[in-house]
Image (cartoon, rainbow, N blue to C red; front, side, top):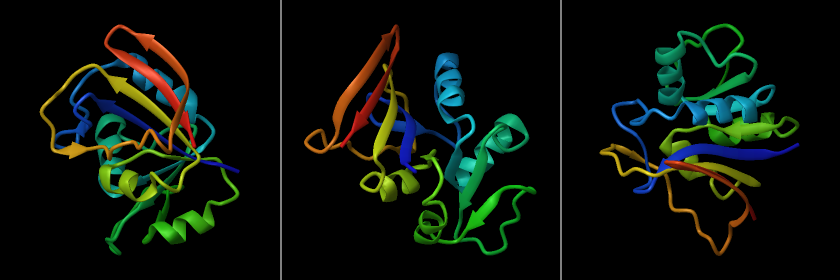
Length: 157
């Protein structure tokens, strides 16, 4: 199967502030939903808690996997929890997986995934969480869809 990464990233590589997304681009939420529906979404505990704050439940129509170092973490029924990225990676090797954040998980997986789905947000917001730099000597843009204020871009190795 495949491992992909999906993120919305501002021009200054900001991806969040105070465990929230610092912009409102409804088209990006729709793109995220369409792209990840029916897939496995792997994320860190803070990202998962942020989603619970927005939706009040795990992402519908997707299998949620949470990576945490907190052995006391209690996830809702149906959410799989792993205490190391390597453990999760091995357990998920037969699934279509999308890495969905946050910054630490993105940094640890950027060089492990096959495909990047990046929504480039044409803003430079104040933030406290940033996406790692994409090495364009490794990643090649294979598809782009430009919109006013943002672009959907797909990269492969």
